[in-house]
Amino acid sequence: MTRTINILASAATVLVMSTSAFAGGLSDQFISCVSKFADPKVGASVMLECTAADGKLSACKVLEAPTPANGFDKAAMCVAEVLPIGSKTGPIKVPLKFNPT
Image (tube, rainbow, N blue to C red; front, side, top):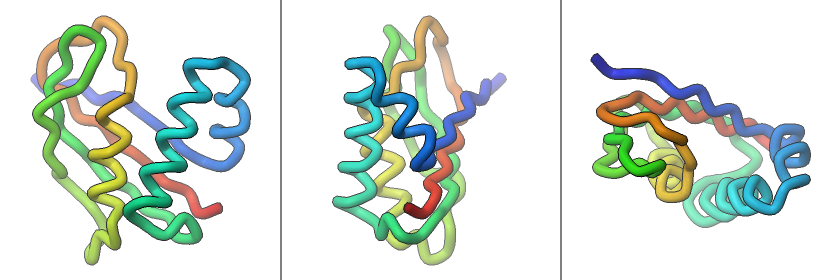
């Protein structure tokens, strides 16, 4: 069975998350990934399927992305590299929402 982790990225979320050092790193990664691969002025939702182990995600693949993806598929894969998932293990679905800034 595949589990789902809900992730919501928005300007407000990024500002709130930046109050802790670790979360600040995650919000910085969100910003960096979107800036590198997609247009931050455009929003998109992407669904990844990954394997969770040891607090990290691996073997991610894009299940759903806008057509055309406009780089949000690559931005989602970039974010998944550092997304903390706690003690979850096994296959999981990871929905990522990128809100326009």
